[in-house]
Amino acid sequence: KAGVTQTPRYLIKTRGQQVTLSCSPISGHRSVSWYQQTPGQGLQFLFEYFSETQRNKGNFPGRFSGRQFSNSRSEMNVSTLELGDSALYLCASLLGASQGTDTQYFGPGTRLTVL
Amino acid sequence: AQKITQTQPGMFVQEKEAVTLDCTYDTSDPSYGLFWYKQPSSGEMIFLIYQGSYDQQNATEGRYSLNFQKARKSANLVISASQLGDSAMYFCAMRPLLTGGFKTIFGAGTRLFVKA
Image (tube, rainbow over all chains, first blue to last red):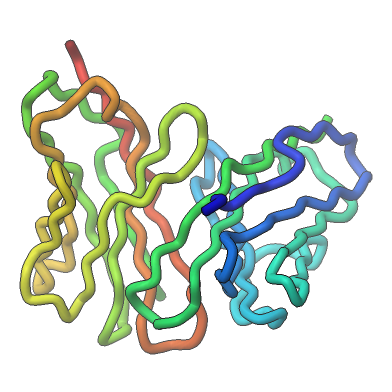
């Protein structure tokens, strides 16, 4: 069974540009969550999608948005990039069958560098 | 508000010895799940172990065990017989079990160094 895949793995952008990151969950998983990881702030929750609906959102500005498609693949978009957006963006999926014991499985991440 | 605290930024352990990584949490949710993840230098987060707040026994997975003390709100990870490959960042995480969604919050992490 294939794991969570994220594309691209590395990305370099300049300030003001926008970027779209993609995440394909494990087959059959319906929930996809996104996290931003930086050395200073650690792992911070961005948002979670389940069956194409955003169910939870972290404390990030509106420049950060996402969506989930009917095949559970998810994209996140960051507009008007700032230097502080440089980070490792991790996607995680889980089955979504039970509230508690489902385990999140993470992808390898997309490392975004904003110049 | 929910919070995870990992007070040890870095830890050293001798190969083959046991090590305990500390984790305390704060939540008002009556039911919650606690997780530990390992992040090697490659960056990928690897699930290690899960403990439900309603579980009577401490969770164990191979060389990993979770020392769960509900009254103290602590969920320490114990790694027995450390190996060089255990050198990595370790994250404690929590998710409420009754509220909707699968939002999980993470601690700041502990970097473990295993010495030969």
